[in-house]
Image (cartoon, rainbow, N blue to C red; front, top):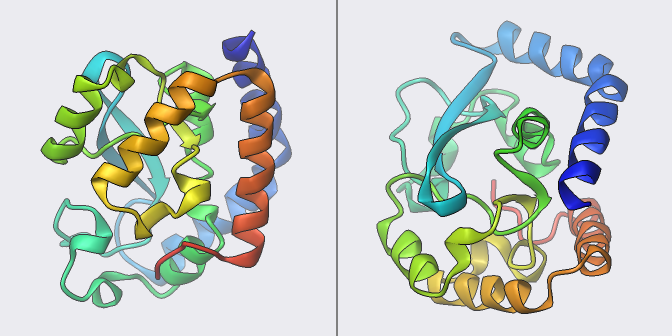
Length: 186
């Protein structure tokens, strides 16, 4: 049921958000050089690598690490990058990954391919069997402010509690966090 829900909701949202997607794409193209979408190597189900799209918010020469690990992340942001990140609009292209089945609306956030400690800890706890999500229990409980161990503890809790209703709760909490701009860096 979850994959069916993910497929049809992502299909519907891509269609409904097409004007916003077009506006964001034009804004990115007009304010910085490079592609509109950045394809990030991420760790998916069973630790398989997939390419996850995001609207590009950083310049092309930015190192491929989690942005909170950069010395001065704001220096890498494009003119509209900060706005896209604060509003989480940079995440809209991930609807494509949900449509393809690489992601779900709710699950552990997909790790970057080089976040070895996070990948190893998730694998040891069985979390790597879950489909990664656009949002997750860790995101609504601290997002970038959490340590790797704390993220994994929330992922474990999600694994134990996962249900359609728990996913709906996480989706609702996600919208509240975005609206209040809680736990969002840059």
